Structures are given as structure tokens and as C-alpha cells.
Length: 81
Image (cartoon, rainbow, N blue to C red; front, side, top):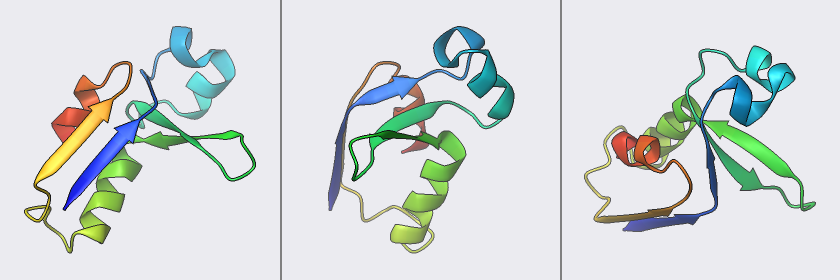
């Protein structure tokens, strides 16, 4: 089983997110920007991504054999895996 993600990674800094979003999301880690069905965007935090992976892989992700991440600031995403 593998995962491939190509998109945008955002650091949780005021410069990256802007003041309003930065204040709203302080302490939630960095983010991936996922496209929504209507073509908009949704921020997915590092913490949320960890929970999604653990839920989908039954508490451990040993079933993951390959993860490909192509984003800006992808190091934080790689550390999750």
C-alpha cells in the first residue's frame, strides 16, 4: 500500500498563513493544503494528518510500503511517516 501526495505544504508561521489564520491555528503544527470538491482549499494540520493515517492503517502504518510527497516544506510531512 502506498500514498502519493502532490500539492502545497505550508509552515505554520504568520508569514506563510497571514495573521488571521496564524492566530486561529497556532500550536497545530504545519499544514497541507488539500483541494475541496468545489475547487477551494482546506488546511489539514500535521496533527490531523497523523490521526487520518493511524485511523486508516489500524493504529500502525506498517502496511505503508511507499510514500511519495511532492510539496513545498515536505520535510514535516515525511517526518510523520
